Length: 143
Ligand code: RTP
Ligand code: MG
Image (cartoon, rainbow, N blue to C red; front, side, top):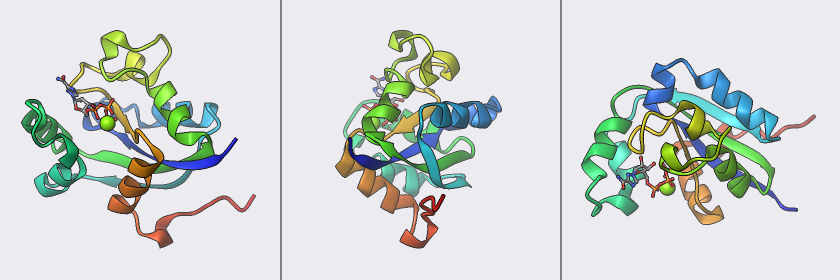
């Protein structure tokens, strides 16, 4: 299996509920290694740029408002099949449809406030990692 990198966000609702550590535990239990991380409070411009692919969708304004409503954690995760492995532990976008034991089933408030983000492809992951991290900020494990 391929070792991949993916991009992850602990969204404002989960930070507000003090669930950063609980969500990081899910990454670690799934064998995903945190190789970069920082806390940010997104500007409107940063949030609009990050979710630009959704700019014509009816929920775009609410999405940007939510993502700028409080601090977030952004992180890069590395591991076998990391993109899909991370999406699997996140669960469905709508927590009402998310499988038991997934991050969204356990921590999300609603489809709008759904606790965490994960890249949906290798290509998205590369773009999203570069959106928030410089190459020097990535710290691959040496042991
Ligand atoms: P994310 O990008 O945040 O990881 O979520 P996702 O891939 O599961 O879902 P995506 O289609 O990329 O949508 C991005 C975020 O927009 C909100 N959304 N609302 N009301 C709706 O129908 C709707 N659809 C999407 C969600 O908060 C979703 O996380
Ligand atoms: Mg998405």
